[in-house]
Amino acid sequence: MKIALGCDHGGFGLKATVLALLRELGHTVEDCGVMAGETADYPNIAADVCSRVASGAAERGILLCGTGIGVAIAANRNPVIRAALCSESFSARMSREHNDANVLCLGGRTLGPGLAEEIVRIWLSTQFVGGRHVQRIALLQE
Image (cartoon, rainbow, N blue to C red; front, side, top):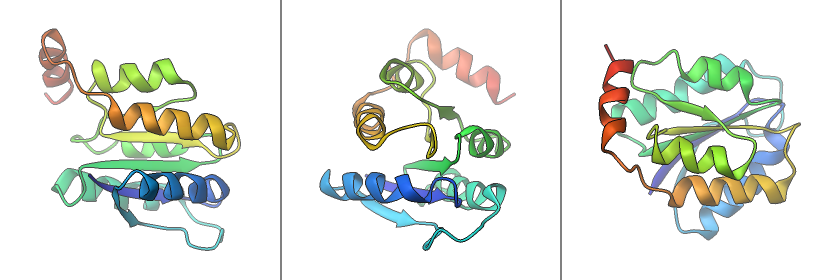
């Protein structure tokens, strides 16, 4: 799967863990920055990742900032994006099964590397169940 990955300075430390995991799992990763922990505006990073997902250049996106809240808000401004802020496994699973989330948001200052890896693994491996949820997702795009 092709995944667009981006972070601001608050998510930079955890991005290395996520990037290594994605590569280990055999995914193709488009690293949208930041590259050295420099101060960055998360709305710009989120817009870049989300434009790649919305256009089909990437199948899914993962965004990180200090709490994950800022990138989630920014990502959900794009009408094609269903970004989910996940801080534990159940939310990661449900964001895919019920909401067909196409962008995962994580907090670099709120998650440890082990939990972040678990969330990413679950989010990537969980399929959308469809059914009654298709209608609900369509309502979001009206």
